[in-house]
Length: 534
Image (cartoon, rainbow, N blue to C red; front, side, top):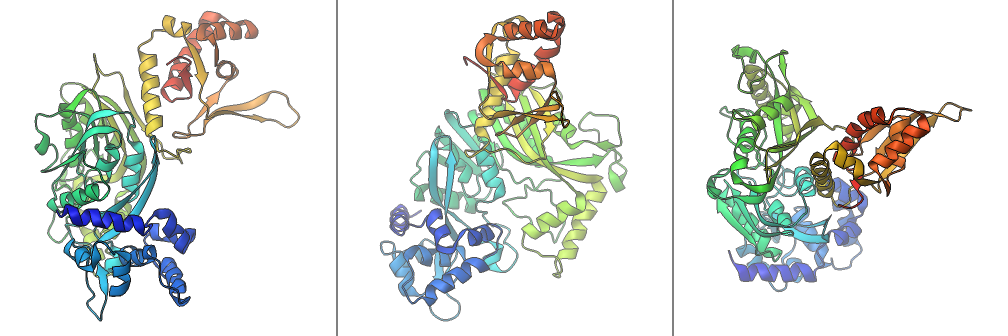
């Protein structure tokens, strides 16, 4: 890797003001939104209007036309946009090549600005990846290095933002998760089975002045045998792909295993690579299978669950966590989406750049449906997996849930909320009822209470506690729980509030304690309530 040339590129990009806010202002919010969806035309029209004005294109516009839109740019414009690196230097880095027709230069890689906000504040980087299908105009190559997409931003937003000594980024791709992890970790190890991806990730780290990431080649945990980390993050190649001839195996999304076996392997093996108290976070797919095994007639017993004809996908994940020796990790698994088998197949065929109506679509579609039918797969779930090795003792958290509604307002991502929920769970689970009654609680700043009344009536018929951030959860309230939450301002203990409510309602204090303590613990675990003194 040519460090000197990359440093010159960084200087040129900085001087050109090649930033998200500059490009958004250049072609407008609507064009920026269209680009995120893979549609270039609105941005191209905006640049065409700029060219028609007769004024020279600013360097940021030249770079955006070249690297984001895939346009051919004249040599003089490219030289003006990259005065330090130069056109030949950009070519030597593999960023550009001569246009196939006429004069000028075209992009060989995608290079675009990226901005974000996390617990440490606002940040911005430049990210190199392979050109997308919109620019290529064809299906992707199998060694394609994916840039920043929805899954990337989802995982980076989920990342627990507390300081860590060491982080492992398993399957780093273009390196974006490793770069995010480097903001709160002393050192990061990033692995991938694609040497091309590792080269691109190393370029991105150097381009953005990040020198705390070590890149290693190898599959899954092979490059870190015998090592443990405070955090493991992974956007693994979890896409379920038929293992038959003629179906492209994209390195960025296909792990080379049958079905959801790759996610299963990560879940089963990650405990060996976590320090006490260490947390693993990953995205994944899991299958919903018929117990009869589909066309093969083979019954699937691996997960150890008997019962109904359809095997629940979250139960499959639970089986991976529990394993043969019982649970060794705390687990919080959140399913965000579920697709039927045909819809799942269509999604990922299109993702590879093959569109419905083209000659290659139906053969791929048939291969996917054959695979699902053979293995009895009816649906595929997608979601977030958080696993934690207990610092002391046995696991206390086993939470498997579906959250398919819109989430709340989380400008810095969900990581802070997840950390608060874990802290709330830990705080509550290590206090018996007698201790909890002596504690003092406050309700979170994003919590509101909603009441509905019959017209002309003074008493509410429906009361709901709502969360503005996090997963935007809502909790039905009765009079007793509503009164309790409303009194959680940090002044009175839990026991004192319950005693006051019991007196006001003329009910048994002991019975009210028994009724209220379980939902109070649940509200702590969901960050509706927090200890007044952490």
